Image (cartoon, rainbow, N blue to C red; front, side, top):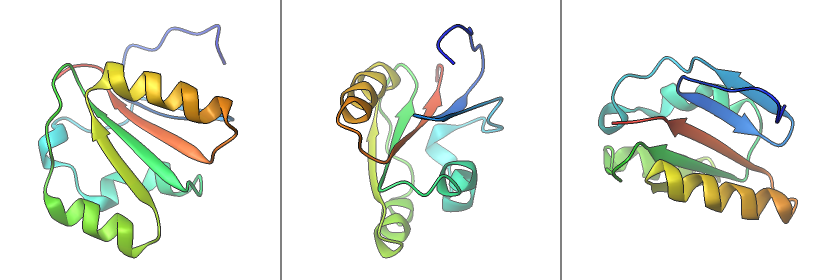
Length: 101
């Protein structure tokens, strides 16, 4: 990792890169859409919703909390910055990123 360009929505952790995340609308995301991120056993998922922050269905945040997983939703540039800080702190974080809205 680190030497590859990605041109699709993706799931990213410190040890995993999953390009081609098959999501078309960040506003319509469901908890099951986060399955590729969930299998990485994160304590926190950062959802980057493209160039603009948009809040998906609030049930998404409730279900994540019920599973004991934090979920932060922000625009993708902010999500990338936050992800980098948390990985540097050795946190179990996963980023689910939309490249644009």
